[in-house]
Image 1 (cartoon, rainbow, N blue to C red):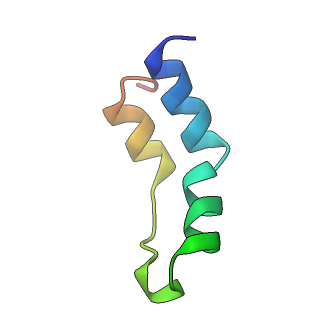
Image 2 (image 1 turned 30 degrees about the horizontal axis):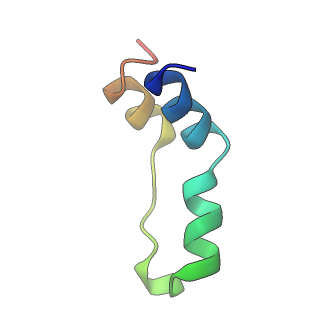
Length: 45
């Protein structure tokens, strides 16, 4: 699986959020715009 596809999976499955919820204080968790991240990664137009 190419890195871009892996990044897309990570973003779409909200794995970053699962990690944040488990290991961070809720005040440390920022809002995330998945569409913006996918565009920056070149996975969406």
